[in-house]
Length: 302
View 1 (cartoon, rainbow, N blue to C red):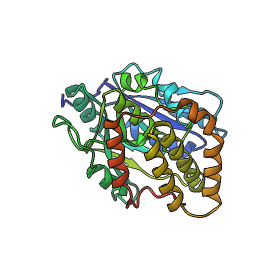
View 2: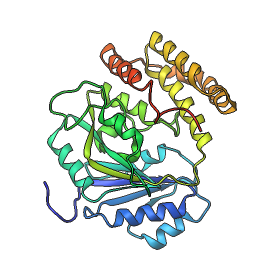
View 3: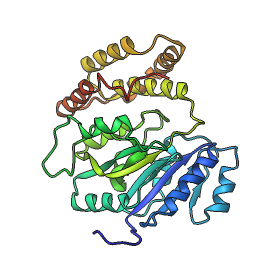
């Protein structure tokens, strides 16, 4: 399907917290899309007038107000309200390029075994590709010939369109991880259920990093969640090796110490929920881990 005009197959879901101006810009960009998608915003307890501004400036936007900061689980709340077959995530500092949502829906329509497609990411205002895009494009994960692009082992929520039923069937984003690299666990659970993930070069998402982001706290959460994911899903020996490699390469500073402390505090619940993946999926995870060793886009710095 490659027609002009509105496309009713995809709903866009955005989570936000205390980024009113950036969110309003993102909603403005989404409002210009020829697909005219329904947009659902989960306001994670903002105190800067975000909800009032959305109601005033974008009355057609569906606004959910849980009254507290749910992190990535705010997306789960929104997906419960989605009635379209596909859901496109974006952050309050990112937006989709015109035509990309239609092409993503066409791709998913044609491939019933495909759970998600991830777009190339363009950084604004420079217009340069995000360095992580090259890693997606050169993904080493082997996949079936019917995939529209390279098979992926994980995805980036701010640049991915997913099959809504697959998202719900895998449980959505895990509440224990809250936020920060939360996609890896969901991606693994989707693959465990037999779904495939793919990169698609002719989809584009734009990202202008918020000036309000706390890069150090993001690093803390990212490292903590990587350690938790490792022990939730990796078999014993790979988990030990991955943990050792992480601890040997992260900066020796207070942020890393804080991340490790938080990870240790979660050991009881992680071990209770530990469910290692089968050998075929572990081979994919190991392949992806080896490819990321030299990554400049995924270092725990900041």
